[in-house]
Length: 79
Image (cartoon, rainbow, N blue to C red; front, top):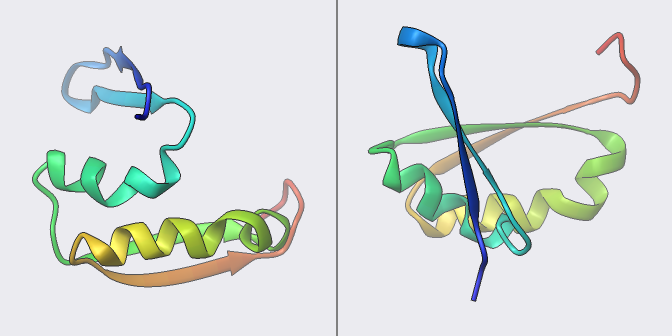
């Protein structure tokens, strides 16, 4: 069971929701579907984070029927 906390950031037309919780990487595809999204998903990460989380995240998104494209950036604030 995944425990989720949801927080709505109110910015008028640019409002969005933040979802936080343990175990959510495996639920990424479901979260995208909940928002009515479909098709392609771009996963942007860096070289450090990618080695730990990229495959789990991308697999969840693909399982939900999305085509995934990955962009891995070097580490550092300038990127």
